[in-house]
Length: 141
Ligand code: BOM
View 1 (cartoon, protein in one colour):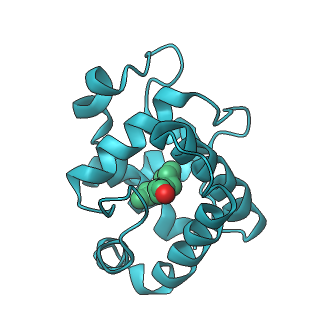
View 2 (view 1 turned 90 degrees about the vertical axis):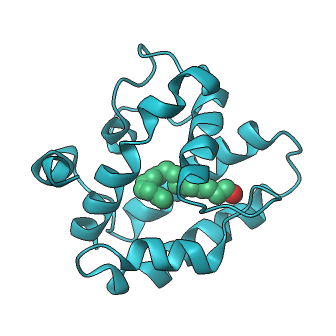
């Protein structure tokens, strides 16, 4: 659900500052990770892909091939309130997007494509949070 996704985003987003330097993601492009879900935020910058890889690595959410680690991602999402209702759907959506962009060799380029695909599909499925929902829980993390 969008409510659960707001918790996951609030927690995951905290890793952005640790990853800002090594990813080279300018503050002007994205100042806070919650804006990922903004209607008018375009998920297109290669550096955002690099940042998502770096952030995911903080929680061991990726395999060595930079694809989603299914078990760890399940466990991570399940660690949030009501997480079990979202984890399967979320892993499914991400994996389905990965399959569509498997031919892109550059990891950052590929991951930003996967992330954009995930945002679109999450909206379609009604599990994308409003930024206000993320703001309401961000202080918990
Ligand atoms: O193949 C690369 C897998 C990584 C994809 C991650 C896609 C989602 C990133 C953007 C959205 C984040 C929202 C919540 C946290 C997800 C862990």
